[in-house]
Image (cartoon, rainbow, N blue to C red):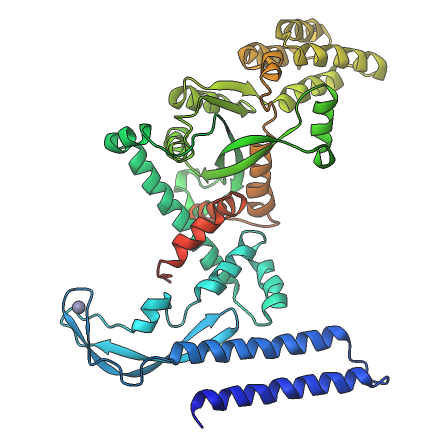
Length: 464
Ligand SMILES: [Zn+2]
């Protein structure tokens, strides 16, 4: 009987005994065994079957390994011996035996099986790495560990989950560096102009930022006392599609009741980093080239309007339509109304009138209404300035006529999803690279970029 037959029989016996035990316990009315117990016991046996099968598969190298192999350096590697190795897989720890080569003057060694499957002995397999990252982009690393144990049935350390999640973020960063280089290469840009790939007729862009708490020791000493927050800037590219009536959100229902097309974002791609505005602009341009923002017929930016945002857009995409997010503009009126009026009835009247003016594109009336409140409310002049500065970005009547999306909910929710939900978990404090890598991994997960990133990543050795 060979090894394979032996382990298959051993596993069959193991499975048989768990099934038998479960059935007899389940049949016994006195036994307290629950279905959950049976499920978990069977799942654990199947996990062990998986580990054994994977170990066998990885050990199934030729009975007589070749005496020599070409080395990557151009020299030759000599067969040494069969050496055991262990990796952490989706089934837990897996040990396998594989041929090992060394003896090239360059000093490198090689195990062909490891190279073929991208294995690094002592580390995590590609399949498990993806699962760890899926948890790591959703939950604080300490919670990921407990959560994963419920699914995997074995323990993975918090550090391993952090490492794998951030490694995927680093892969995304490397990809963005490649995009940045090509987007500044005149030859590439020339070819890009002649692209035959389909170009979206209308593409949207949006930018926003949110604060992330950084450990003080990361910063220069003179700043250490106060500066513990950094801006994580987030951008996204997306298209719009109509939403079927039954799937409309509350906001979309309000819009359709006013006779507008109910639309939602699709094909969303996020990018993010902790960078100064100018450097972030280069990332915006690079990801924009990949999204064909420079080639689309209509490029529309919908943002909530910090000055650096409009400056970046004007620098890189002077032809783009700039729109202040409708909900921010309307919210500004609502906040002012609450500050200016104690009584409900006049407040509602004022708000109704100014919101309608804003919706109809009568920004000068809105500015006048804010100015008129100046005597009774200290916040009115600021609001008047805000509407004056953004008047050209608030022609909502024109935007509606063209069926533009006028809400920046897409990028706002990305800031919320990347920063608030993941980077601001209770007590979370980051060093800059860890925050950036985790944010980039999460941005990839939220984007329709996840599969390409995982595929690029799986092709790479997982350096630890
Ligand atoms: Zn060599």
